[in-house]
Length: 121
Image (spheres, rainbow, N blue to C red):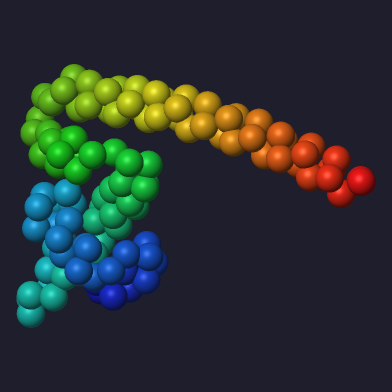
């Protein structure tokens, strides 16, 4: 796939894809003989994975470390540690977001009750 096709498929700009590759967030994408990027299934898998992780707020540094470790044999334990750490951070963030949603729902209910009383009069 061309960079424009991948860009469209994953709703990311071509500049973002190039940047992610340049900083090591996506392993080097294969190229055609003319130098044009030729995203294969493995490259697309990485793009999908990174998009998902970044959308959830996983830090770029952790992902770069993970990608680098993926290219090293015998690094499974370190990779597992990174994934668990990121999962735990996301779980904490989810708890915070849930508490915020509950607080907002309470405030909305209070305003709805007040508005109902005012509209009844």
